[in-house]
Image (cartoon, rainbow, N blue to C red):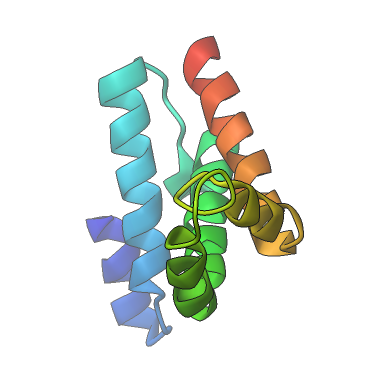
Length: 115
């Protein structure tokens, strides 16, 4: 990380610190928890990192605009309401962000089991 930042500082190049810190975090987590070298800082693709990023982005994009709706659905009577109730599930199935979130979570699960 330091060499990358130093090179960018010398050349006057703009640096996306969020991307660098994300790659550093993914490299560290995969090495510490799973014993696998990811090398995302060097530009190598990482299925786990991509799925984590997708899941986080989709959950934020889904939940922010839907908070009011999901809160109202939570208070509907059982079996329609509540977290995990029919209304809540239908709402998620019809939302493309939530569907992409579920797919990314499936990838995270399968990658965690593989590692």
